[in-house]
Image 1 (spheres, rainbow, N blue to C red):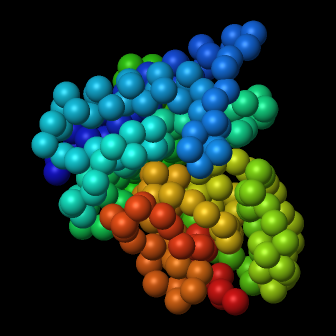
Image 2 (image 1 turned 180 degrees about the horizontal axis):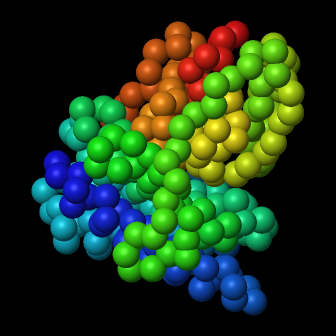
Length: 262
């Protein structure tokens, strides 16, 4: 895969999808339906999915594409594929809290090697570059990339860690696990923004003791890895892999190396 071609395509499609999402978000009302797993879906999810899917299929018709909104119609037969969550954090979107993102990733041999996370309501755009680094583009976001700052994880102090946790899926098990650490402060964020806060050095540790799918994590995982971070399984601390049956993730921990995992 030519990442020199892929990165600008991801950027263009993420921004276009974000524009469609914000058109719905700015409206007076929108319909919210429940999917088969009881999670919400809106017209913004479907519009963003259509934009991204059309763009990826036109450019790379032979690369398998998995998206949250179309996953039920796909059987994964490859370890190399695109995986997309066109609107991650639909609950945040419905409640108009702004912590929602567009996630696009390319997974090669089970590893997310290229990804973009765009939070249109917050004006934050994070992505990997062809050279294997990660950046945040500082905007405003035009047809051509603007100024960027390179992302790198923090050098954590295990006596005073900064922790980020889910805004909508926080539970007692997560709080109990966080309680094993010496925590300086905590913040909450929705969607894949949590990965990006670790990637940017704004947090040291993000544990997730709850159900997620590969499209929820792949893009943020790619950005965090490119910024020097790690995402590992909760049970054995092995690297989180992609292309699993059903696209379900195990519990995981995202962190800056130097954090002593408990």
